[in-house]
Amino acid sequence: MLNISSSDHSAANQAKQANPANQSHETKKSGGTGSEVPVTIVHLVRHGEVFNPGKILYGRIPGYHLSSRGHSMAARTAKSFAGHDVAYLAASPLLRAQQTAQPISKVTGLDVEECPQVIESGNDFEGLRTKGLRSQLWNPKRWPQMYNPLEPSWGEPFVDIADRMMAAVHDIRDKAEGHEGIVVSHQLPIVMVQRTVRGQALAHAPWNRECALASVTSLVFSGNDIIDIRYSTPAREI
Image 1 (cartoon, rainbow, N blue to C red):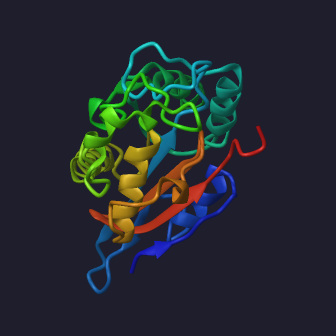
Image 2 (cartoon, rainbow, N blue to C red):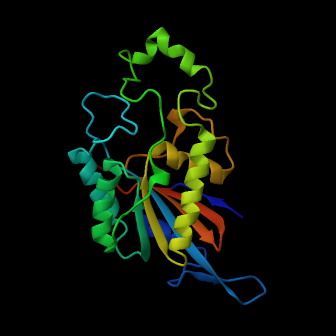
Image 3 (cartoon, rainbow, N blue to C red):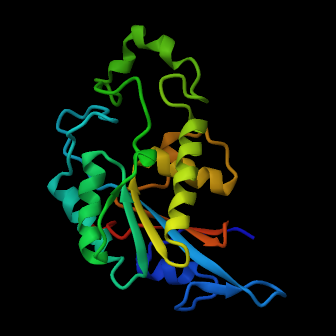
């Protein structure tokens, strides 16, 4: 049975709680057979705050890097993985994700593997201001692109994001089997994983997302099955 929870505990505590056997070796007995089923945890980390003085939707535009606060967020989240049995580390190819992964690399001693599957979602409004009174989406010429928010019509379909992200999650599970894997990604892609695992509709109100900067969404696998999903915010005080 899938257990869904939200917590402000550190990633270290939440990983211990997430393991249903709560044991040092990530295996548990399969009911009635005596065989061991590996328990694997895949952590999805959102990147830290980005330096964006123009307040545009930067999406996949290259070169957008972490702010000083973003680097502090990344360091705090990385620290929460100290002592973990992490066997695999990957990140989106975008600079902000790679920078967020670097302190995790130092803590875990692992190299960062580039993972294009977990890149930011595609969006036709990249480079535009999209929020507030100065939003360029108030311009009527943009409105034809916004006819279907359930898909959405202005960017990569939710279902495509969910499909590529879930494929990446299962690939990471395979590579970290019996241990823990970490991947640094972006808000909407991570939210698509959360909603898929929870059996929720992919279309949603953006203001209802639970995916803060440098947050950790953790999926617990028993064998190939996801049995738990947890959420923590190690950098919440920064």
